[in-house]
Amino acid sequence: MPVSLLPLLLVTDHSFSLFALRNAYLDRTVSVDGVIAEALRRAADEKYPSVWIRLLTPDEIEPYVAALRAQDPRRLPLYGIPFGIKDNIDLAGIPTTVGCPEFAYTPAESATVVERLIAAGAVPIGKTNLDQFATGLVGVRSPYGIPRSVFNGEYVSGGSSSGSGVAVASGMVTFALGTDTAGSGRVPAAFNHITGYKPTKGWFSAKGVFPACHSLDCATIFAGTCAEASQIAQSVWGIDPLDSFSREPVSETRPIKTLGVPAAEGLTFFGDAAAESLYSESLEALAAQGFELVEFDYIPFRNAALLLYAGPWVAERRHALGDFLKTHPEAVHPAVRTIIARGDEVTGIDVFDGIYRLQDFIAQTVRVFRKIDAFVLPTTGTTYRVADVLADPITLNSNLGYYTNFVNLLDLAAVAVPAGFRENGKGLPFGITFIGPAGSDAQLLALGDRFHRLRTTSIGVTGRDLTSEPALSEPDSEIQLAVVGAHLGGQPLNHQLTSRNARFVRSTHTSPHYRLYNLPNTTPPKPGLVRVSDPVVNSAGIAVEIWSLNTAAFGSFVAEVPPPMTIGTIQLEDDTWVKGFLCEPLALEGADDITSAGGWKAFQEGR
Image (cartoon, rainbow, N blue to C red; front, side):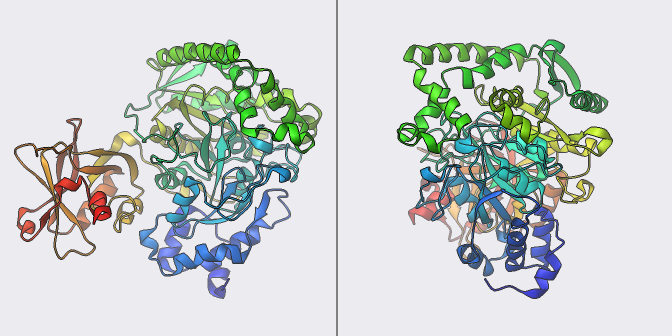
């Protein structure tokens, strides 16, 4: 890999903040070659052992870097951003081990989430360590070694996404992919003082993610801040026709004002008085910000969580391994084998009993969220030394899932954020998690960002100062914008949105009262959207994407819109109105009517 010496000198002390790196690329003060070489140097740091199962070689990374050298950084929202991939997520041509060398396979294609990140400009550095078969919350169940907390090597890093959490908290990469079935995208965030974003189930494609429980699994993002996680998610969200569990991201619009807090009988900290104190301080900080704290009965949620390992869903984990557990029992970690083998004892009657019980819990959840906008829970009640977990692997692991295991079963979204340190800021970190209904992702991320800044200004052990990082605006203070052509995701001008931290909301259609034209002599090619008085016959409306910007970003964006395009107000198929792109009628001279195509992307594909 060719390396420029000047960018290397400049990037050695770089924080790898997403926004700082992006600005450095735009200013041309660093190169992709220099950043990736520095990422590989950091990834080899022996201070943090067992983070990686497989680091890519410079030759293996070169095709990704080469694809960026001729690109304009403004056109790719993640241009040159180094990231890690949990080793149960496929990267084409690189073995996926799932933490078990005897099980390893080499995929021909990357997972959809990986493909989308690379298409947005991100550069994979390697495959990170994990609890074998993504079974565990401790990070000690791997034949590839035991990653440790970046703050104290005697303590666990959290799992199963152990390596991904440490890679971000140590500053080796800007972000890393994890997965979350029982809490694996959140516990490592708490133990390493970073952000863990677990999206609404189905918002990130699971194609190419080796399943733990396929009906529950979520790919996740570990990042330094919620603003980074939100920006990265824009490139990943979206339905995948090759994943039957995938679904279109549709954002919840209700603002978060009321936070649910478990009543005393549902709270436990397993004797960790410091964690209990930090949780109380977190609640006081939120109350001081004007949030209403409402107690709720946590016991039903704890009982729902028990279905995951003490109920029939353990059979779904067993299903994922097929005959391997019988043919290679010695290759499976003893704790993992003990847990997954229980699936052989599950009957069909057990499965339906579990489904019926879960439906009862879902109904209770719906009732609770009529009175509460989101939960605020400890991410974990405590943490443990590696030696203690090795001595009692099942019980202590179960304790760490006390506040996490119910989330995917009940189809909720979650964001884990730092909440301070034990021992007056000198000890191990503590974290809390905001949990909300499906679709509340943007509100949770904004709330997480706000809270992170209330409680601490640090990020892992990176030395980054949160006060110098961009803040994430509250969704209810944003303006929604419908885009129809060159600003759509993947189109040439989409960077004008992503560079302003615009947030993708959903794909939809206009009402039938619009026609679409292919405008002549425009660079890049653009369509023109025009409202007409009568509904267009046989039209289901024009395909648009809704993006959300804060008011300052919206103002600067509108200032860049050149004629003949204008920003007006557009009627959507559900009869709501949003700001959006329209076209001056004068520009339609010589333009082709392409309304029948149904949208700009469909027109381009058909042509």
